[in-house]
Length: 459
Image 1 (tube, helix red, strand yellow):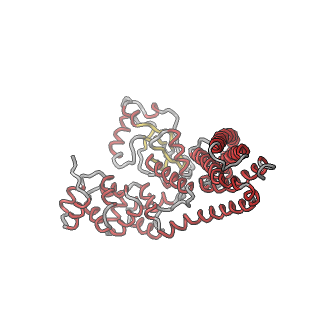
Image 2 (cartoon, helix red, strand yellow):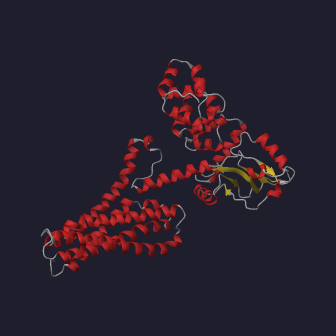
Image 3 (cartoon, one colour):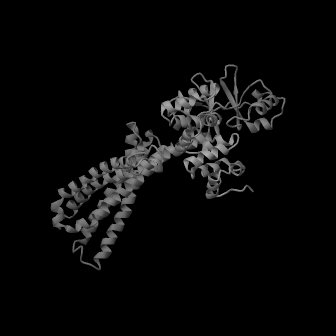
């Protein structure tokens, strides 16, 4: 059992300058645990932790830290120690760090790398920011098809130590073009004398370095892989992408969609690291748009002022009516946006979705309308608040609910398709946006139904 000191005890060791004990304790921890420890320390203490780490453990811990903490540590460490950290980092994690730094700062760190790693760093940074090339690492094992299994295993023992993963071995020709890939288990159970080409299945799946990162997420999900090869336009194997990097992309995308769907402009940094005024600005922009939209609700109410004067009872149900429409629209928008994000629904499926949501909206509206009518009917047995015309009022509410829930459902379902067709992010059709849209139109539907049903009675 590895002894793990609490955070205050680690601080005491640093402040007492007992670096021998500190080194003995922390070098037995797991990298992920050490990263959690470092995140809870001050900048000065973080530097002392990294000075006490031995060998590749320092870079392994560094890779677990968030980008802001990585930047702080690099700035605080002496140049030689910072360069050693960057040198030992995985190429893909190092690229993720460099792309977040100002260009001049990133270039300064790149210049501190060894000539070999400098070439790798610049090669990866030349790809587009949203491309698979930014995710890949050149640390993989490649073999030739004419090699025997024995030679492949010997090659892995000699060169596989510092590779990103050994789960998959890649087969290339003399021009380094990708031919096939082999799971390591296939090699381990194969006779040593047979050649690699005898194990081919001809089903190699590869990404292009210029593919969008979201493409990689979809391919990994579809084929259930832990690593995929990356080729250039000529089919030459230039790197691999592993599942951990793809999961980071998927998490980042999901976070942005959730923020946008909540009526917030997507944050560029984690919540706790977002500057106060930036946080206010990103929230205020949507709130202003929604506020201006809701002002139309007051305009709609004013348009039906005469109807309200004649039948004040109609005002009782305004919150019920507009909230039901907004809720149904938010439900539909949530389902469709997520279905689009997962690839379950595509643009060409809009008519199928329209039919399903038309039926769903009618059914949901009928259910709520029935409940609304029943509520008015029951209340009328014990109160005269709705007067002698309560059946007509109940019918007005019921029909309005059917119409508004149907409209909200169709609006919430179709708006993401419209935005997608226009090349915009469907997630911007947020729940508050849909609710605001349905609020205004819901009032028009409600009072239009009331003017028809209650004409000659209350109106």
